[in-house]
Length: 400
Ligand SMILES: Cc1cc2nc3c(=O)[nH]c(=O)nc-3n(C[C@H](O)[C@H](O)[C@H](O)COP(=O)(O)O)c2cc1C
Ligand SMILES: [Fe+2]
Ligand SMILES: [Fe+2]
Image (cartoon, rainbow, N blue to C red):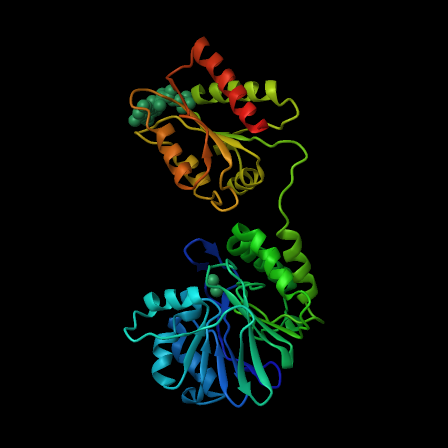
């Protein structure tokens, strides 16, 4: 337990050994499941923690009060790293009322599977009086990073409970920014967290910043990683979030072509498609990336920043090849929605690669161009001419 301000106590749990979060996030510096008790005349618990750490969490709460004294459990977000301990905790908090957003109340029903589940739904700017001059105000923060997300603000002590926003999978014993021992590692954790959690929601990040930037704040109580302060890292983190969330603007159209090719058949088509695009958009940058020759992280970034792109794969064993799927598994479906994409590839007898890629990209709601382009084994002159023509058509469509 750490006392943050007059009435705020940090009662969360450290998990220094965690190395993977939510299947895909590497967490080289562990994490923490932060939770805070706000003690006015009434007591409010903000967030719970991962179910695995229930016992340790309970001990931390008991250092401040008996759980039975808790009047409200406020869930800024219902992902199980915040709500996991809720159900067991509720048994020890008979009078506690759950306070959350409308979306969160729906999710919690299906997360707790409690038959008699009830929550007090709060909307943007609603307040909750804890007595003793302590009032909480709720700030809607949808898609930061689930539809249910909100912030909670304690004006009297200038504390913002920002949930995952400004968070990081980072763990040190003294969880406040001024005591961070390895600032460079913290920076890696902060950026990794932003990219994975908020990268798909950049416009919402900017809206979230707008909502809190003029609030008087002495403490930003995040749900993972250190508490941030104005004299510590908060100004820097706020500036970083603002910079990272800016929309990408390219000086020249960026139309990368990603492909794999065992015998250069798909590659030849790629070259001709490029020729066609450049005939119509000579100012465009149309780099050819044979996927296996490049770093996957770099390719993902190029795809994310592109104005349009192409994907080419031969059919091998009735499918596109694994490097293509790996690249596509990192397509950020939110920021790439409606992005034009052309799919192509060489095949021998069954030719599933092109339709399989098209089907995947359509599900992600990208704007797939036409039926794609398939050539049988080695492209002949006619195929190559068709590829140039298709490249031109694709480029023309981008001008509209
Ligand atoms: C191991 C292997 C498996 C293949 N499996 C299929 C297949 O299931 N269906 C198909 O249409 N073509 C199949 N092919 C044929 C390739 O799609 C064809 O050779 C194509 O021209 C290769 O294009 P690339 O030079 O761009 O790699 C296979 C080829 C290899 C080498
Ligand atoms: Fe989350
Ligand atoms: Fe979280």
